[in-house]
Amino acid sequence: MDLSYTQNLEDYHLWLAFAGQATGTYIDIGAGHPVADNVSFWFYERGWQGLVVEPQADLLALYERLRPRDRRVCALVGAQDGEAAFHRVDRLHGFSTTVADHARRAAAFGAAVSVERRPMTTLASLCAAEGITAIDFLKIDVEGGEADVLAGNDWTRLRPKVVLVEAVAPVTGEPTWADWEPALIAAGYRFALFDTLNRFYVAEEHPDVFARLPRERADWHAVRHMYEIGRAPENPVHPDHALARTLARGFFAALPWFDDDVLSAILARGLAGRSDADAILAAMPDRGSEAFRFALGRIACGYDGGQIHDD
Image 1 (cartoon, one colour):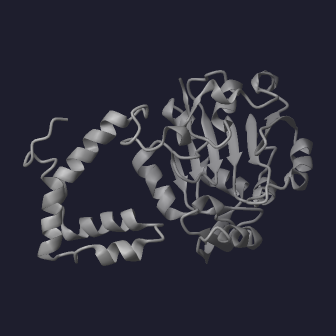
Image 2 (cartoon, rainbow, N blue to C red; image 1 turned 180 degrees about the vertical axis):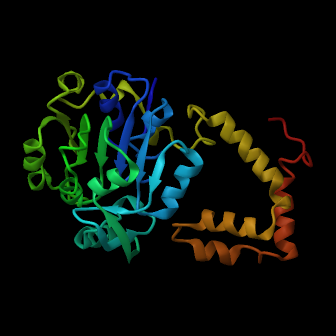
Image 3 (cartoon, one colour; image 1 turned 90 degrees about the vertical axis):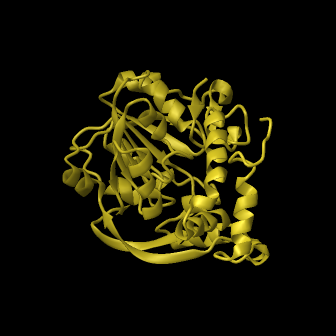
């Protein structure tokens, strides 16, 4: 069974619209993580490629490692070229936004919010710079800035077959499409589907795609869902369970061979986002001490052949 990576079957709905098309292109604005909750990864996995736009550099860097065929732009997309304030929501990166009110609501979940100035481009300028004149689908998920992204396109030049736009406000879930749908309809796009989170539109010149896109959300059980399969080492039904278990064994066996910088980076990742990070650090031997090295040895010996286990 196919695996959906999205929140709400967005990738599966698009796949139905394109009837299993072997190759294609996309622009993914507000791309987020390259795999989790990602609309375009389903297509990349099947041979497509496109342009991903994400203002959070740490997330965008993962695309270079995991999706090297995609072109990448680290910027905001809006109604005009220049720069804008970007409210970065720590840990809950999907809530990061150019809309201050939305960031404040996200902070209610306990996440820290920082503000930084970031470059902004319009969709029209972006396509001109990248030499893009035609794509199969455009996905926009920018936590409240969707109207500005749509306003910055030249719909006479770039006409995606399908436009997918997040259509409810972050946190509150209030409908937002009244702010931008009339302009999209006026540009020659037909509304096709509201999946309770996003609205799908199809260019009038592609009635075949319009006919294939469902009018109602598909059966939830038509695919497996990424969030349902959990972490790979822990869940035997995860498609990468065996690989993850093997990597984990190798990782623990190799612990004594990692240098201090690598160990520090690994620990920082392990502690990221934990409310009890200080308590964990306090209970841990000082890095660089003999006690810390002894701990690494005790962990590694269960995997490096020092201890014999029947597994």
